[in-house]
Amino acid sequence: MSTPSERRSFARDAIMWEALQPHLQGDPLDVVDIGGGTGGFAVRVAKLGHRVTVIDPSPDALAALDRRAREEGAEVSAHQGDLSGLLDVIGAEGADVVLCHGVLEHVEDVAAAMRSLHDVLRPAGVLSLMVAQRTAAVVARAMAGHFTQALAMLDDPTPAGRVGRRFTAGEATVAAVSADFEVLAVHGVRVFADLVPGSLLDLEAGATAALIELERAVSQRAEFLTLASQLHLLAVRA
Image (cartoon, rainbow, N blue to C red; front, side, top):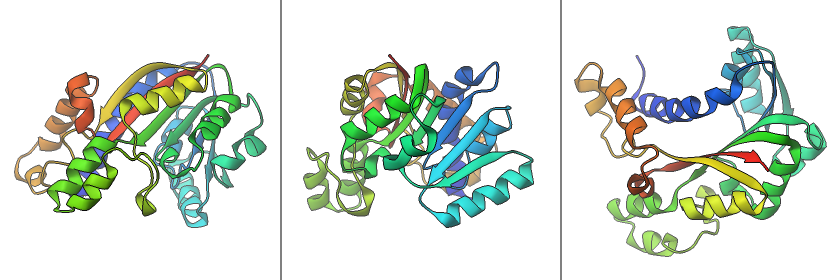
């Protein structure tokens, strides 16, 4: 039986997967997953027939990726490293699609990181970028009684401890556009999933599916973006 945390992750992955899937149709593509960890997305993409490379700094995560790929009959190339060494591993214009989920929060120079993501993509290549959203983080800290932390985070986009940087939708969009990306869509991810007590997902059959349907319905409505724990941007290299 899945845990409440796993059920919440289903909501996140469903929204991102549905947005990305149309860009994974057709002939095999070269796909790079930066910070792909244990391969939750990478293996799924590889099973569609694409050539997938995961770059991650954790040897333990890459070992788990290898086990998962073998268990599911997928072929994934793995390299230990991080975003700063992306071009050294892949080369300029070496990818058709880049997944960068939960990584940009932890880099010091966002502009340089975005340029690397741009340069590794071929013309019209697709970037799937997921970042933590600042307004929701402020609300979460205030609701937990951490008022000083909430106040400090309110207007400060810079990294703070292990949680890293937080973005607004406008800041994430500007970062992409400034690196010569054309933003196709911005989705709010986990708008309600992180607010719903996990016990509620256990009380009624079909609750998780209903939550995903609700998340899908509000994911691109501007008035709900500030409630989302994460933002998912789809962009193409201009």
